[in-house]
Length: 254
Image (cartoon, rainbow, N blue to C red):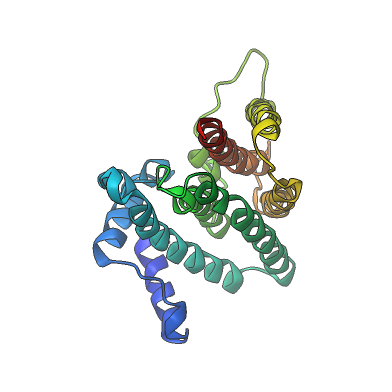
């Protein structure tokens, strides 16, 4: 299903939504991201494409503009998953999203507390990074996989290719990449404890959300090696590590 169709489905949803729930998305920003996603199968290069075009003086507002587009896409994808999945998957996704939102909204406002100015987009930039990656994962969860070409599944394209080591299979390679990213995340968390009172519940909710969502790839991924769940975890872990590294830099400077 094309990205344009995702937005069309969401437009139908908005007809029945209260006016206050409609995100303030500009046609230009939506077109910029939609066109990018049409050319980039993984979608990583599309994250920040609106934000990066703005000047530093309005970074926070600009991050909010792009965030609105990713929020829109995220909701559209959730609608698709809910419309096409059995009750057990719908329930798991709902719980994962609830925990994810709790974690995001506990973590991202810290950026505004650390620097009430606009630290590279502040809380909105943090939300933008988290929301865009979650949207890419849900896009893969909602997409049908080509059983004849397992190596090109959607989530593997998002994570990028894994260079196999000697006598290493794709499953082991995916696990190794995840382990490396997890070490980076844990190291940053350790350093943050020295500078910040980051609530452990932030990470606890994030982990519950990651496991609740990513484990679903074991159900839809029919390939021999079943690497989808670890690739999903890698996407989630990488972005959380990047955000916490950014937070560590911010609190260290103040």
